[in-house]
Image 1 (cartoon, rainbow, N blue to C red):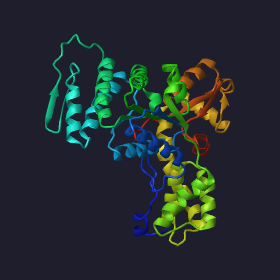
Image 2: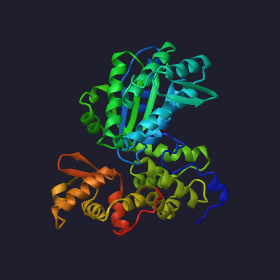
Image 3: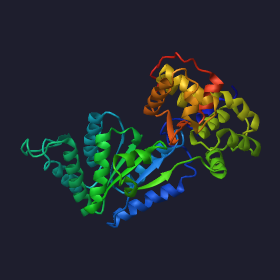
Image 4: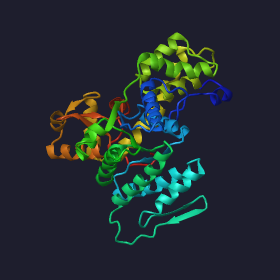
Length: 396
């Protein structure tokens, strides 16, 4: 490769899950929506929760973290978790997150009031910042963790409301949430709104997330603002490449920028990979198209390592065969009956499909059809032709 270590050290592009890019292009409407939610909270006015859904690698986690930063800067009580299919773990994450949200509150009097609120809920104890609060109610007062969680959130929101603040819960991979805590959280969003209390769920997940929420609670569609997070426009894609490059003194020339836009297809993760590789391969200023071409193998390696290989490994042999059949028909949506016809035993296809959906590798955009949840997965399979007997090496 060309280029020296100094130039590499200045590389502004950072492919990685949840890493904040130097330029968050094309998401201004969603950012303004979050700004509005926080502003309404400070005016003691209620709003709906927010759901972001789209393919993997599209920047949902980055946007979720950016939104959390907006709420944090306005002194809201916030915490973030990643959903899990294990109900016990999910409740544990929620119970750990609430005291952490309190610990980050800057106002000592409010922090103390929130800590005291915990003492009104049976069998909840926590210790942080040198202070311990322990509940003293009888063991028969509350029975389930969901009830305790609702009481905790209710008491916290009552105190936060007095200061025109709110509780914001950010959940990534929300479609993965176990059914019990998922239903509880949707119910709490509903009931807190009815009680005029400022509790908001900001969730992110795959394209089937709206359906998952509606299946859990039919009224979920009315509780949230739903925003599909898709590919960036050509203008926003150009900004995603050019603004950070210019800010670091090495812009792309017109030919290289056009090539990068075509290669990335508007996917934010691809922008970071192709941008990083082209930067590393260039020793000129501005960066020319030949550097973009030389960087393609490095960019593909970043994409393979970051998006594809570990997910391929985590699927079963039958699942890999299913993915390979899908790849023959490009990126989809693809008829499930067409894929099933490629298997000697149709039942094997159904089992494989269910397992792949459980892993979040594919989703059903409409009845009888499936599609990859990761952009470029079909191209990866056709290009690399990975073995169907690979073992999972736990890199991701």
